[in-house]
Length: 265
Image (cartoon, rainbow, N blue to C red; front, side, top):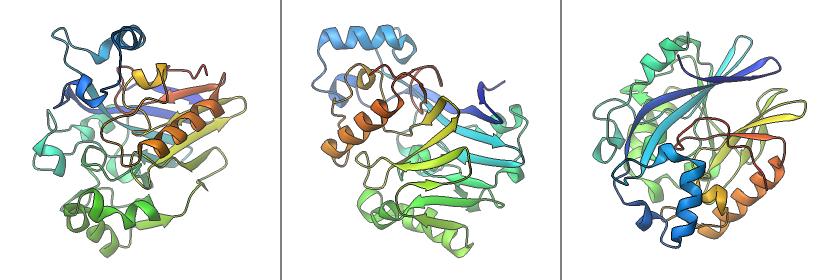
């Protein structure tokens, strides 16, 4: 049964589309990390390192259930033959995860795509939009950068969503309802966005690839090799973590556990 966190009348459910080693050693992806920083990160997130020292990634999506509205944040690796198949360690199994959570494809009314990297859009379009009742939400800046990020996604993702009139482009921070809002967190990609679910004094931040390893929690200024604009990514990461300080829980795409990395900055 997928894990979930409930705040107020809203439940955030972690859906794991797959797990496996990253295609590049972590010391190459984070060349400035010292041995001491690796030790601290491994203590914080021991599940992200295999017995042989490989960097293990979870590939997660998150469902936000609020009354009859169900919003899906990201769509994972996708099935065999999806755009991520050239590098992802395994095909995804999101439909089975949705079923285990008591959700159906028809239940999804909105899909928020944090950014246009292939392990976050895999089930978005499978020949046609997979979530046929959903509006897909993307930052206009990210849409404009598709040819820079991955030209093949224009034909396999953007054009089918546009043809089905299911793509909604937004500019910056946008409220989805009284408890949920999108915040622009650019840098990993030009139009990267995160989702905040808030009730009272508690916020769950669904962070996409704002941070991809616990080393970036220990040292938020840390540069990751696959960031389009490392300085902008650093600013976005620090700003979000500082804003959550003492009251926020991170819901992360790739760390060992889906929840529980409370911000302590």
